[in-house]
Length: 461
Image 1 (cartoon, helix red, strand yellow):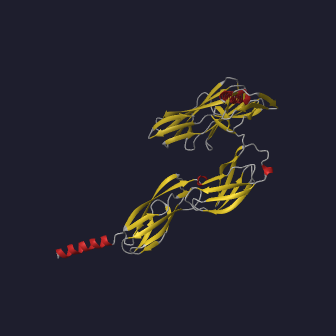
Image 2: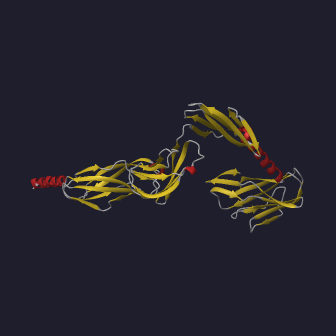
Image 3: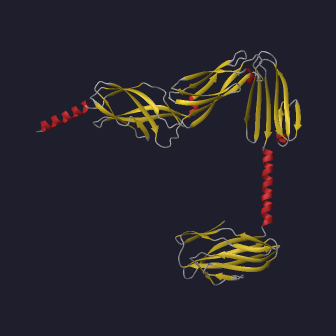
């Protein structure tokens, strides 16, 4: 009996090893990409050879990607089958750059193997490059090209080409790593007044419901060529550097013009100093005229220091705000709260409001509210309330007038048989008064009582 069990055990092991998943996987495609703005999958071409028994294979992943083929793929023993795997994220996928995708191939008997696919996630504009031939004044045509730099089939796209020399629109299909070229007819009247040098070639590309714009350059050939670069950097001290380079073979005249308004000119310095300064209304024009020898570089530095005017503006704003705040405050209310120990152990608080009159005011009415769960203790300080509305939980004091600099303190005690745990907020005290026949209103600061298991702390704002 024991020998029979051992024999069955080894037979099961043998069957399991015979039926194990044995695949040879070769990736035919390369440099696959996924376009971030497009809801299209990344595509991988594989050659899979089944070196085991005929099997129905299932492809799946645990990374939250939609994956095809979604069903099973049958591969017979010894068969090599071309399988195209497509993956696309489900939901938001905010990844850029290289990404390693892990997936599984599962046999019909439950055994499986783990494989990896690498791809790159890029923005749509990084997939294309636009360029053209040089513009020669002696010819009437120019070649314009759009190049798909990545292994991604965009299918049909629409592109608007725009430059100083031409403008046209084309709808066409472009596949992986494909280059599309177009011959454009030129009209000399369109660029008769253009200077020699480099001009921007814009390509506005529409794919699905997405639009991006990329730039290239067009060179306008001439013997006299002056290249210009313009760079800005800095925040509080803004610096602009203009460089002009004579890349031709003759002496070339160079004129540089910069505009500043009458305010910014006060904080701006130049190196070298401009040759001409002309004011037209609120705008000041600065001009540099130079003759550049072949290979010579003219560098103009323009610095604007915004730190000083920024500080001045901040000080002015602060003074104005403080002045307005001071002039509009005739009465101030400072509310305070303190914990009171009662003989019966009830929860009790003393609320005090310091009323300070900065100017002479009349018909002053101080109104405060107390929490609904509390009651007023019928003992007060020097200033007794004019009215207590226990139903609406309201207490009031009235003064016929307050002189400038006069201070009154009104106070009262509230108590409750129900204890408080947590942060206990008190309402804001309000004062309504009359100043020079005009009614005004002032509010106090906020006050809080914090209680944790019978221990009370006080907070004020």
